[in-house]
Amino acid sequence: MKTTIAAATGLVAVLATPVYAFQCPVDVNQIDAALQAETSLGADQLAEVKKLRDEGEQLHTAGKHAEAVATLAKAKELLNI
Image (cartoon, rainbow, N blue to C red; front, side):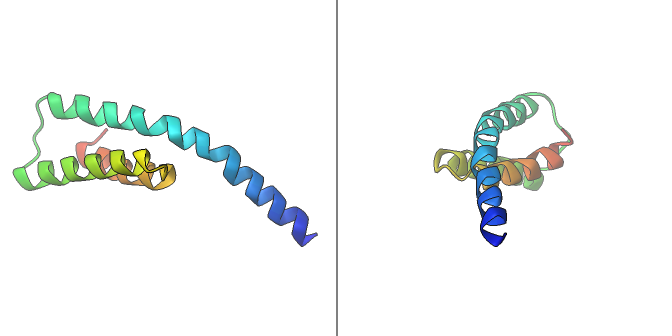
């Protein structure tokens, strides 16, 4: 029983990874578009968004897609997108 549950959990993790891989570039593009548009963010918040965006892109490149999506989500939250 425990083996079945462990196998099912592993399968779900493997199947979910490609979904995150495709989400990262979409998030980066949305952040870039929002940064191109006029924003009411202060200099500190703008710097934080850019830092999170770059960190998310690096995580994506490193294959850490779940972490990249979470990091990019923080940037999108600051941008209200």
